[in-house]
Image (cartoon, rainbow, N blue to C red; front, top):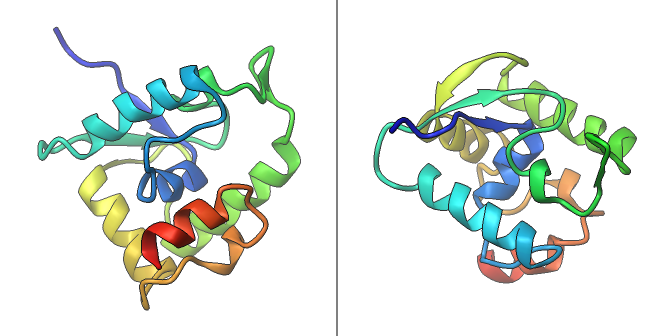
Length: 130
């Protein structure tokens, strides 16, 4: 049976690189863990870049009626990551390529990018890379 497509907002691609198993709630953490395992399975996992509700949003408590309560801020993050990585909505690429783009263009020195400064998960990611 074919696995469902992994659809990712650009900022979620960045977040997926730093995931430590924690989440907003148990359902979100379980969903993100499953996606994280698939992304890092060693296979040539393809992702579809989208600028709206994605595979991670499906279990997010901020998702209400297929829309994010934080949509305005989230769109800014998505645009910043997409612009820095030269990717566009609707683009398909291997996860290995997407993660390499993020590392090279957003984190060349290994530090979290400034666009993460106001994220509630910043301290968790910073600790992981500390």
